[in-house]
Image 1: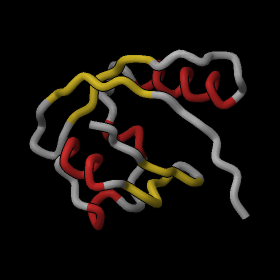
Image 2 (image 1 turned 90 degrees about the horizontal axis):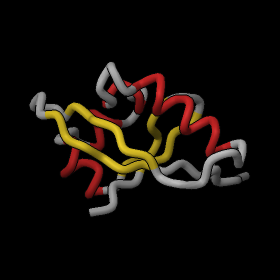
Image 3 (image 1 turned 180 degrees about the vertical axis):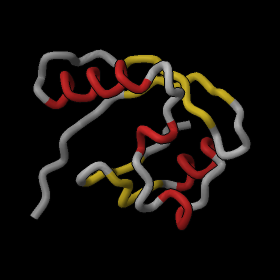
Image 4 (image 1 turned 30 degrees about the horizontal axis):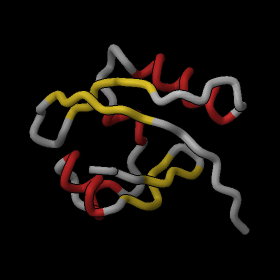
Amino acid sequence: MVAVYIAQEGRLVFVNPQFQKYTGFTEDESLGMDPLALVHPEDREQVRQNAVAMLKGIRSSPYEFRIITKSGEILWSVGTVSSVPYK
């Protein structure tokens, strides 16, 4: 399953159906959410650091972290971050 989301200015602006199935949040519930709110509190700073490093081209390998689903279940996830230019 590949869950995809797009965040702009720290808020979700797009989530695919797999993201919704994996997290348990509907599209309406997800849009506008801070994506880090889904990350387990103990993993948030590391996820933030990895994302910044990937966006700067310092890190290229995916990383593991835990998410908390809408039902409260803790799941392991593998993440990667990419910058998508648009206009």
